[in-house]
Length: 336
Length: 159
Image 1: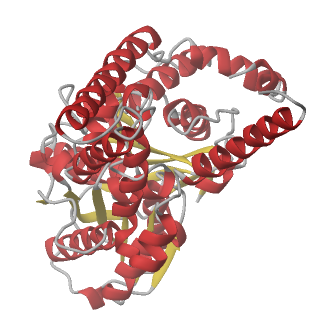
Image 2: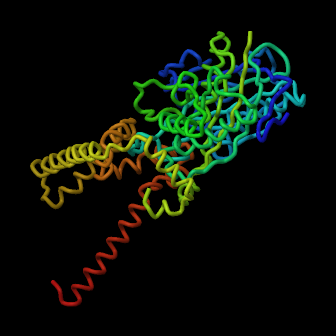
C-alpha cells in the first residue's frame, strides 16, 4: 500500500524465510567472514572466466537459500535478480539454471534492495507464495567491464572503492518464521554532477540522503525508531558526506546506528580496498549475512537498508556524462 | 574539476561539489611525485645496467644496445604482469611504472591476459591494444608530423 509519495507499507508482512551469502577470497579475510554461508579462496571458482564465476556464485547462493528454507526449486514462483554485468548476464544465466520464472532488474548496486522491495510487493499482493530475490557482483569482472584490466598498473586514488566478490539471496514467503519486510521506499535518480568513476561514494551519497529523508517523511518516523540504518556501498568518503548532508537537512542519525555495508565488509588492514567495498554483492552479502544474523541473535530489531547504486556505464563515462545515483530503502523487522 | 566543467553544473550541483570536496581525501600529490621519481629512476637505472651488460659482454655499440635493453625490460614487465605483481607495484609507484617502457608493456600484457576468456581472435587479438592503441596512433602521427617538418626544413636549405 502506498504511503506518502514513494513508500510501500507491506501490511501482510512478507517474511524472509532464509537467506544466503557467498563471498570471494577478499571477503573471507574481512571481519564478516563468519557471516557468509560459502567462501571461495579462488576468484575463478574453477570456471574459465570471471563472468562464469559470478554466475556460479549467484547459483550457489540461490541453491543454499532455497535449501535453508526447506523448499524445492519448483516451490518458488518468481526469481528477481540483477547484477552489474552488461545485459545482466549473471542473473539471467543463473535464472536459466534455476528454471524459476524470472524478472531481471537493473539498479546497479541498488539492485539488492530493488529486488527485495519488488519481491515483497509481489508477496504482499498475494501474487506469489515464495519469491527468490538476489544479486551478485564480481571484483575482476566488474573491473574488466567498468575500468581497466585487472593486472593493469594504474594508481587508484584514495576515494576509489573495491567491488565485492559476492552474491546474496533471500527467500521471501507469505507466512512463516523470520524477519519481516515492513516497508520499502523507492528512490529517485539524483545527479549532482560528479564525473569521477573513482569517486562513487560522493556520486551516490545525495541519492541515499534523498531516499532516507523520503522514507522518514513518508512514514512519519524518526531515525530513533531504527536500531541500524545501513547504506549500501558509500564507503568511507560517501558515508561521511551522507552523514553531513543529513545533518544539513536537519536529520541527524546517531553514529552508533548509521553505518555503511562498504565499511563493514573489509578491515582497516586491507589497504587495497581504499575507501571501502562497493558493488551489488556488498549490500546483499552484508544485509543477508551479517545484518540478518544479528537480527536472529536478537541484537537488532528494526533495520533500514539503503542500497545505493551508481547508474553509469563505461560508455556514458567516456562520453563525459556525469554519474547519476539512486538508492532504495527497505525496512526489516524481527521481533521474537 | 576545472572551472570550465564547473560552469555547466547547476548552482545546487556546484554547491554540492564544494561540499563533497571538503570531505574527500585528496590524492597525496607530493608523495606520489616522490614515489614516481624513485620508481621511475630505479627502472631507468636498471635499464642502464642492462645496457652496460650488453655493451661489455657482447658486440654492441651504445646505439644498438638500446633495442635488446628495451626487450629485456619489456620481458621483465610482462613476467611481473602475468604473475600478478605489477599492478601492486604500480599502486605504490604511480607514474613511475607507467611512463617507462615497462608501463607500455604492462598495458598490452594485462589486456591480453584479461581478454583471453573471449578467445584468441575476438579476445586477445582484438583487445590487446585497447589501452596502448591510442599511444601508438598518436605516437605514430606525432612522429609523422615531426618528420614532415624536418623534411621541409631540409628542403628549405637547413642542415
